[in-house]
Amino acid sequence: MNGQTIPPIDTSDNNSKNHDLTSKSDENMKENGNGSTRLWLENMFKKYYFKSNSNIETDSFFSEREFGFKLFDGKIRRHLTFRDHKELFANIMRYVPSDIYCSSARYQNPTANMEDKGWKGSDLIFDIDGKDLNLACAKVHNLTHCKQCNGFTNGILSKCSICESSLVEMIDLPCKKCISALKVEVNKLVTILLDDFGIKKDTLYIYFSGNNGFHIKVVDDVFFNSSSQKRRAYIQYLQGKDFIIDNLGFKINKINNEVTILPNKTLFNSGWRARILHELGLKTRNHKLDERSFNKIIHFNNTHETTLYHYISEKISNFAVRIDPSVTMDVHRIFRLSGTINSKSGLIKTVCNNIQTFDPFVDACVVGDSITKVNSKVSLKLSLNNRRFEIKVGINRVPEFVAVYLVLKHLGDYIDA
Image (tube, rainbow, N blue to C red):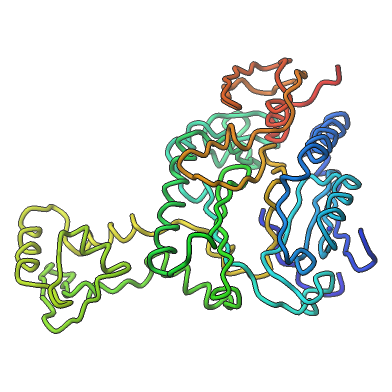
């Protein structure tokens, strides 16, 4: 790999400059089941891309971006570049990748080693993932798969409940409650970006990741050249890190909860300050807290069990956006390309024009509907494409989109009829 540092894929030969990085093919073969299952998956992916080529999103800076392919045999091809959409499509049909990625960055030489690419700048990207929300429902409907005994157990466990092996993996099976919780975080993020960062709505794009999360992309020259350090500062603001209580117009003694008004503190009612003051029912006059607000604080102390300091800290935590900091800070990361299949689920990474009405189990579920057979390893209920399915252990006759979902979740194998 010429000693270069390869930035991560958010989880790569059309010319001699493209690099071929291989992982252990045997392990990847196991991930995709038996040989006939893998060939069937490749065929399903190829059929989708042949019919839905126009769904793959590209922009006017196509030739300045780095692309990456992960193949079904475990190989990963990085540092790819294509002249146009037509050339990308030709390579997709040639290699039939399990995953297709594109950089948020633009480069002078996208196919060069990382240190020689010539970074021009990167779009501002945020990742909101279900695993970071620690939802109660996920602990019930997700599965733990033991690699030692190949058993499956409901819930998220650190050890197999059957053989007590610690060689376990979690199988993510998001439900509608998970998606609703993710949408709450997306809305919180969008609100702060629009109100506090001054980002224009038409430069902000929301995508369903294709599995259990959302990506938010900002295409704005103001942020395009931001360094990793500056993007870290954006993250800290969005997460409410290092927020100073004094900025609300009063000081709290953490020991005895004594509140001291700061009469000379100038308060411009915006951002985090506006959110917390509104939550407390406090108002400013001439940009300073008035006497009525001070009386409300005294009333709060007399009527609430929790201290004012902890109440404010809790509100800051509630308003903070739960995002993956490493994704935003990494200006060289490559992300799943919109309109392509997520190999963790068989669902499509999809742009969300209306986050409120978007339903990933319908709007992102478009991979084949012919009836096929799948040998399921577990019994479970699924809701896909506005249809409910009750899967039993053993052979099931289901639409292709259900079979693909089960196979990619490692819950079943395709049966060649």
